Image (cartoon, rainbow, N blue to C red; front, side):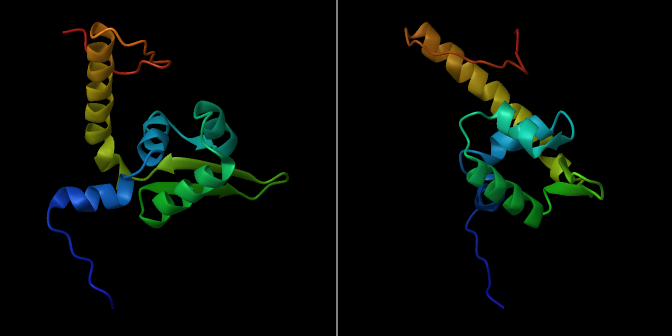
Length: 123
């Protein structure tokens, strides 16, 4: 068996949720169970192939559950697993920091928009 080696804990975190799309997927699933088509609609710039790949990786790592309903037509939903919900505080902090960063860039004169605001810190 191959040994996985990390120099610092954050490497293990990035190994599981790193990349452009996984945190975005998890932020959407944090609000409840979603079907693939709902995720695709919520994340319009992700390709279907990439969405499928990211969902499979998150499922493999135990971060999300894939629920298959035995019906015609087939129905599949995704939800954050109990283990994956341990990331909720981290995801909330990432969202808040991103909103803070966008606000700073706007104040610096950049033209930038945030389509969806979930965790606005009014302080």
